[in-house]
Length: 186
Image: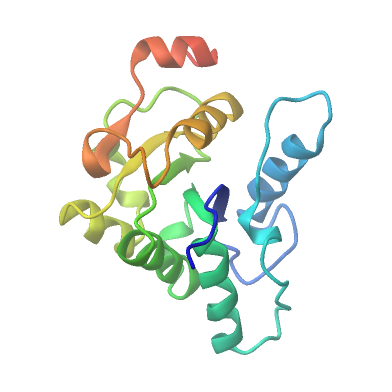
């Protein structure tokens, strides 16, 4: 039986902590806050909330099963990319591998250090975890790259799915006109 895939899976480098301000969990919490506001049109059908919660002390096999369930319910993945994301050696690479190789969902790469349009994603390669770089290089990943801005992320979450992949394979980006509609200039 195939899962109904309407969720967005959010991946980020936790840097060994769940304390906001100490890792990219801050940006995940911000996305959850955007979604929780009743006067905001940002809606996150959060795949993390669709599977049973797994405590930090859970065994790796239990966590992997939970992550598979979450990814199986997802139509896309937001990968929050900061300066330390590429140093994650366990969960972020696993999540990228599974999202691309098994579940064939597009990745929405949202860069926290950028507030201007991203027009040349290959120039940001130094931010990419090896698992992402490998899949972009071999052509198996469908990725749209953008700054971590609500309007752009919301558009990508609504637009891209396992049934509607971004153009340009792993090096997708928005046009200047699209950025103008999002209120992002530069």
